[in-house]
Length: 335
Ligand code: GTP
Ligand code: MG
Image (spheres, rainbow, N blue to C red):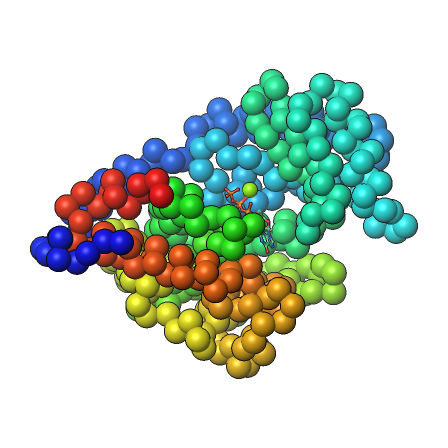
């Protein structure tokens, strides 16, 4: 691990602004990627509508929430009448249809936590996961997209944090680290907490959008075009925000007692959520409340050893931002 003594002189953080913005821009997908995604979706719609004429396909995840970096896989949700269907059967049928339409690497994962069919389209080269009736994911995708329209610094911060997490190997829920969705929520919450705030809390403003999904009411203010000046009082630049973000998670977050909550724009206590001990496989060592499924902790996958890895990586990043002579390289160095 990085020793402070090797890098004694503190650097001027603002100097990192231009190189970080350059990295951010290099991660933004080209317009033609969007075109290819649409093309694939249209083809999937054709295949699906033959078998299920009333079904609809929705994009969700990073291809639709605006936080997708270049060359990402796409996430698709098949919305189909619920009554009396067996999800596994639908997935197996879907896999069969896709296979006979020359899609490659078709695999139905019916036993996964979120059952899906995986495929690769040889024409566009895009890989895709299709799930069934995961409507909440479609709604939280819209929430993230709406947040991203308020202040460009969210987009910049989240791209850099995601890129860092992928480079450093801490973006894999099956290894006990955090999902991209969790990292974006951490960025939103962090910007809600700045003084002055850079982002509002959309779920405490007047309701302009409301849907009920699986008995969960999802309501928030979605007229975000009226909020584009919200963060203007705050002049912090991206380099400062990246540094302070890592600093927060390295040295300031109270892992023993705190839950971050985008829903309220505040920090809640683990005590109040009853997230103080391990229940089954949910350990609550780093607590990130889902904005709609409030009983859902996105940090539940993190165990004792991976929380240590995460915290060491946050510290490493904070140290690099402050002391490394070449921070933009070291930060994203493969682990
Ligand atoms: P990348 O694929 O890494 O670019 O990011 P992504 O935004 O697609 O995130 P990810 O693959 O982690 O998740 C896809 C979507 O699933 C998210 O955007 C959410 O809408 C939804 N989702 C809902 N609950 C969860 C959860 O507990 N874990 C994960 N990973 N995703 C969830
Ligand atoms: Mg994804």
